[in-house]
Image (cartoon, rainbow, N blue to C red; front, side, top):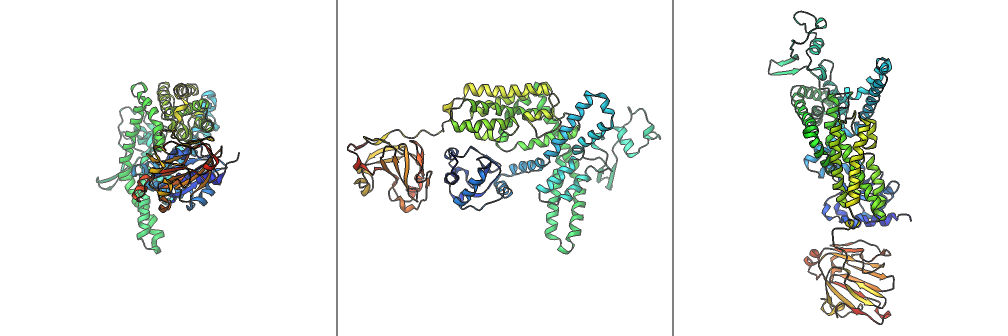
Length: 638
């Protein structure tokens, strides 16, 4: 049966806490992307059960509702019409979401935004490096051919000039001129600087700067064992300000910080320099100031800091026979949940650029083990569950996770059920430790799971890593997760019988104490003018369907609903006394007129505090409005 796009949009909107709680809305190929002002006002359990919603998660300040390709755009159009919210682009939604995030998350998001666009170049270079290296080892004579030299040069290009790629991307993220950003990136690896990869070699220093050794040309020296040389410097203000003539190949953090500074300088100058000379003064001043500060302060300080971070990462992965890797394999999925996993790109890029052309990315096996374990857990749920909707979400989500895209599996299935998520953490931890033991590395980053075979140095060991991490998570989930754990945390709908006839029972539609009609604080209802009635003093603000049937009538203010059972009983459920005067404030309809309902389905929600603050009793009245059709009507309390 085709999805009713309008109904889906209406039901989604009904859970979001009103139009004022929606800052912006957009959609991508599969998801409705919303920025919500107050997430606590969103009825998550009800939203998860809306027909058409395959899953949802909160990432980077956005509430992302998975609906599916070819469907989400139609639901989105209806959502805009229903909600009255102004349509926004994905970039506008991202900007609105970023503004809500705390500063530390904004910083990490910015790092992710810098690295994600250059992933295709990194992946392409990494794949080619792996292939060229494999060919060179398999066919030794190939390593001396022109083809090998050509392919190796092409493969190394992205890493040799990585600071330039990062600088251009960073300038775009920080809203600066990307060409000025490129100049700063090129400056940091300029040909007048010694290549950073050779900076520690006296021979390289002597030959690059043509420094004689004991009066002999450096190209004639054969013994370098006792030669010690310092890298020459440019003295700008005596010894007070000097620039060490070594480049920043293999560094990431100094480039990003330098370009961020460049963008701030450029923006300031655009605001304060007269327009007539802005074209000349602003670029010149921006590049000169940024270049000076980069080479004198930012580069030396942050390249050292980055080296410390990378050394710590290497130590963490290998320490204690892989205990550090085990810990990171367990933690990794939680950083995905928090939207922090892009920060690992800095570590991976640093590892690779410090040793280009090698399988230096020893962080990749950790990410791959963690991701594949979430695949195993999600697949186990999909195969074990009897719930058709859960199965329809879990199976495709698990396949996505196997390819390295874990968000649908984590947010749509594993985290919602919790145990599969935890079992995935266990599998990922053990798999990551195993990867450390086996010495697995990669020639690129941004690729995990099954596609990771294209970049790993030890394919057979990688098979073992995936089998162990995914297998452990699958077995644990299949054995120890049970279907009944998928039930929501809140208690089930009330089971007390409020009214009964020969046609069936009317269950209490709200939780609370049932009282006789005469005790209802309203003369009309106390006199049962609408039919045989009872009142309920509620303990929570949810109205449930009292039987299987359909919605006959829904008041525009959502304070009352009329329902009809499949057997013909017609019941009015009225929340509070004189609450019509509240004009819908504090009430939310979860169904529409004509909807089919099952006993226990949520029909309405109401805010008991707002009702009392408005001076109205919150007693819920249940009245059988077609009692004349029945001979035997019984009330729970007479």
